[in-house]
Each structure stands twice: as structure tokens, then as C-alpha cells.
Image (cartoon, rainbow, N blue to C red; front, side, top):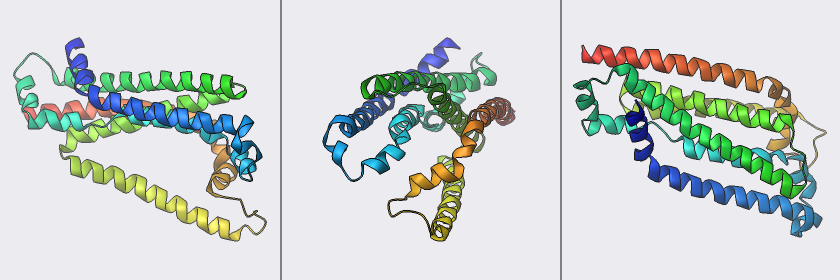
Length: 246
């Protein structure tokens, strides 16, 4: 099992390094913007009030970038089929359960590393900007962490079941695209009906006012989704692998 996990991490080393570099660049950029809001060019800018209202983007966007960049995808599963690794591994003593678990554990470890980097970022951010580190900040980053695990493990499950990257990508694109389109239509409709909204009232203000109340349930929902995805990924993936071997 340790060898399988090591193999999964080593094979994704290059995209992980590139993802880490881009994430660090984004984190440094937003950190510099936040400092500029305090003692730099943006301190006297007309856009300062809007940036201050939506300062959570400086708290959480880099964390989302860290986790999404390092979470990766399930391309290694398709590579296993193309290179003949899946057929080879079926002739060894490695069980389907171990194969699935190695994928799940390796990806969870990588996302956990991104979660730790996100916590380090938020601590550095608060120290440099003078913001107070709160339990809500930690809770929100933890919610992002669980959400990333849920999406990643569902991706792994569909990759094992469908075996076609194009189909899996289409499913996820359709789900997230449909959700985003419905949310955009709802936002535009409500923005048109808000007569008292100021000229600088934008999408970020809309999301904060309309859906801010969901935040207190976000951690529980994300945790439940992570548990459901883990259970579904393990049992369904193992079932389909055994079915193909038979």
C-alpha cells in the first residue's frame, strides 16, 4: 500500500510543483494588494471602500487557489489504463481495494498539504495586515478543504467507473456550468430589482448579502459531502473494478 501511495504522489510531482509556484505567486500578489490598501497607493483610492467591504477575497481566494492547484485531477487513472498498468496490477497480489484506497489516500494527503499551506498563508496574512485571526477564518478554510476532498473523490469515482476522461469532464462541466448559469441569472434578476443599490454595488456584494447566511452551515455541509464522496468512491469503484475483472 505504501508503495502504491508513493507511486501516485511521485507521478504527479511535476504538476504539483507547477501548481505550488502559481499558488505562491497569487498569494504574494494579493498580500501585496492588501498591504497597499493599508499604507500604499490604494490607501487613498476611490475603490478602497469596495475593496474593504469585500476583503474576504484576500483571506480565502489564495487558499482556494492553493487547494485547487494541488488537488489535481484523476488523469493518472486514465494513464494507468493507457500504459497497461491496470492490467499488470490485476495479475499481482494487489487487490482492487488497495488500488482504490491508494488513489484516495494519495489525493487526500496532497489536499491536506494544500490545507496546511492555506493555514500558514492566513496566519502570515493576518500578521502582515494587522487583521485578527478568527475561528471563522479557520472554519471557512476547513470548509474549502472538505469541499475539495468531496469534488476530488467524486472525480476519482467517475474516472474508475466510466473510464472516459471526456465523459467525466463533460459531467462535471455540465453540473458546475449549470449551477453557475442558474446563479448568474438569479443574481442579474435580483440586481435589476434592487433600486437602492449603489453604483459600486457588484457581484461580490450581492453574494455576501444574499448568501452570507449559508456560511454557518457550510462546514457541516462540506464535511457531509466529503464523507459521502469517500464512501461512494471506495465501494462503487471497487465494485466496478471487480466486475471488469470477472
